[in-house]
Amino acid sequence: MNTLIAGLNNYLGKRLALHLADEGYQISCLVRNDKHFLNTTETRPNLFVIKGDLLREKYHPSINEHMDVAIYLSQDSAEWNEQYKNLELLSLTNFIKQARRTNSQQLIYITRLRTPFIKDVQQILIDSYISYTIVRVSNIIGKGSILMEMMKKISSKFFIFTNKRLVKMRAQPIALHDLLTYLNFITLNPAAFNQNFDLGGPDILSYRDMLSAYLKLRRLKRPIITLPSFNNRLSAIFISLTTGINVSTARAFGQHITGDLLCENNHIHDLFPHECLTFEEALKEALND
Image (cartoon, rainbow, N blue to C red):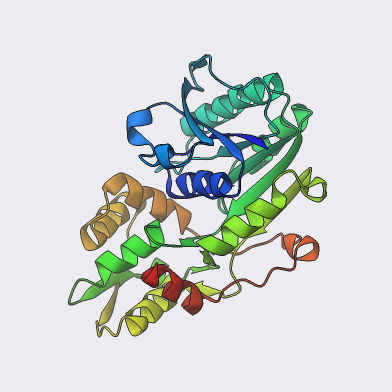
């Protein structure tokens, strides 16, 4: 099965490409800068890196003329403004051109649960006349994921400072293994064509609940001190200072937690009644990986 993937310079993109390659798929990874991508392609002869720029429509001529499925991963942004929206939709539109040129049977669009212009994305996919699947994903629990790295860095402090937003906001974190299992089921499955799915784990937790569980599992005693909420800019600086992640990533994360991140469309469970790991089980798996 030939698969074209774009948007790989993030946590899920890289792991999805490797997972599908390990499943036996022929994977073509469309990236702007191959120096910032995988260093493990030589161990997977069925994984190919192709240089291309979706915004400028410049591609290396080595893209396979036939692809069974095309997968587009939306990139996290520090600002969900009109400019970002226009660039994202342009990039997706040009990716669809490549999917049509290679006769892809399915186009999978993967984004996070809180994406304000998802209706615009769906209309573009409908107009493409390619069978599409929209997948919205909650926080991922896996070795090296943003959530895991943040909890690791926060727990290294003797005192943990958080704000009211993190105390209250709830999410449904999902284990990386479960997420990849769902995506494997969705890929080229006619039952998933022209469908929208929200993917999250079985537990509904606040970010403070997650951090407390992480501390308990690692047997760390750290007082958690709650501070007032700040505006987005100050909140990003605060998150960056307390976690060690860069300000841009912190701003994207802050935008991601402006409200509860709960799955609204649970139709995937009717099609594929997979039993996901609990948050604690997923944590143990990620820490032992």
